Image (cartoon, rainbow, N blue to C red; front, side, top):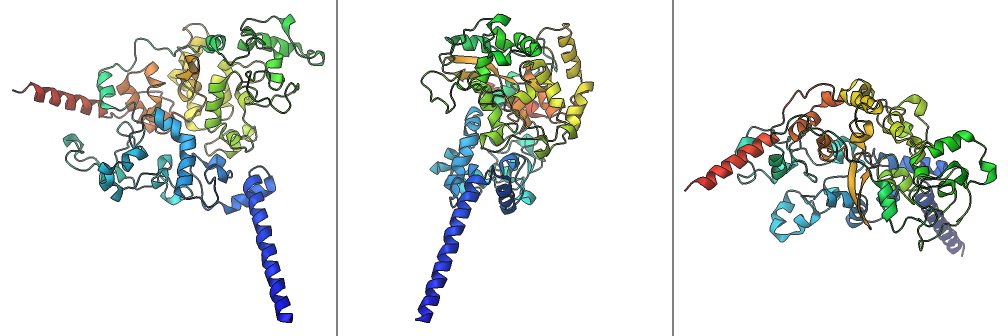
Length: 480
C-alpha cells in the first residue's frame, strides 16, 4: 500500500514537472523575444553565434524554427519566405528544382543542394564564411571541374576562387552573365550621362486604386487646410516644416499620419483603435498606407527586420559594424532617418547615415569624389540626381511592379545590394560608370574603404574572357 502511494506521488510529481516544463517552454517560445527577462533565458539557449545576416533576429527563434521539432522542410519554408522573392528576381541559377531534376541526380552525391541549409547552416561560426556559407570554399570545383565546365583560360586559377569579386556567384549573376559582359564591353570608366533616375511616387499616388484620394486628394495644401485638433496646432515650427514637405504638396494632411487607419484602403481590415488620434504615430505602420514598397523594403533590411519579427526596434548598439557611441541606443524606425514633420530626403540620404555609422568606408565619404558631386548638386551647380550619396548606392532607385503598373522607387532594404556586392552594379554603379570599371572598383577592398577615392588597383578579367570566348566562337563559325 505504502509502495503504491509512493509510486503515485512520484508519477504525480513527474507529470507536474512535465506539464510545468511544457507551459514554460511555450511561454519562452512565444513571449521571450519581447520580454527582457525571458529574452535573456532564450539567449542562453542559442547554440552558437549566428551569421551577420541573422544575428539581429536570433532571439526570434520561431522566425526560422516555426515548428520546434521541425526538420529540413520547415527550415526550407522559412528560408524561402524571406529570401524567395530575391532569388526569383535574381534569376537564381542553382534553384532547388535543378537538383530535383533526375538528369542532375549524380550531382547530389557531391552536394545535396535541394535545401538552403545544405550550404547555409546557422550557429556554426567556426565554419561560416562570407554570406553565411558553411560549405568549403572550393565547393564549386567539385561539380564544375570537367573539360566541358572549365575553360582553358581558367587553368591555374585557385580552386577556391570561383566566387572572387567579379567572377561568379552561386545565385545572382545578373551583372556577370556573358551576354551582359559582352554588351557592355569597352565602356569608359565614366559614362556620358551620369544621373540617377527620378522617383515618381506622386504619379503613382494619383494612379493608385488603393490610395484614399477621396480623403486626401493629390493636390497642394495651404496652412489653413491643417486638420489637426485645436490642441495640437500651437507649434508654428511644425506647421512650417510640414508645409515644406512633399506630404503637404501631395495633399497628405496631419490626420494622414496621426489618425489610426486614415490611409487604410477601402475594404481592408480596420485596426482596433481605428480613428484614434495618436501624438506619436507608430512607424512603419503609419507610413505603409502610402509607402507600401518602401515599408516592405525597410522591414526586409537590417534596419527594420527586428520589427518584422515582432522584436523591439534595432539600435546601433546591436550592430556588428562600428557605430557612433552617442547613437548606440537610438531605436530605428522610419522617422529615425526621415525626421518627423520635415521628412527631408536630402538629410536622410547622408546625414542620417553618418549620425550612426562609424566604419572606415562611411567616414571616408566626406573626402570622396562622390561627396563633391553631392555638394555641387546641393549648391545647384549640377542637376538633380547627379550627386552621389550613401543612399544612391545602398538604397538605389529601382523600378517596381504594382497593381496599377510600375514606378521608380527607392529600395529601402539597404542590404539588398551588399552581399555579393556585384548586386550593386546594375541598379547603382552603372548609373554613372562603365561595367568594367564597376567590377574592378568593387573588387578592390582598399578602394571601398577609401569610399572610392582613387582608381582600382586591380583588374578583373571577366569581360576580357567573355570577349575572347566570343571571338573564338566567331572564328569557329567562319571556318568552312
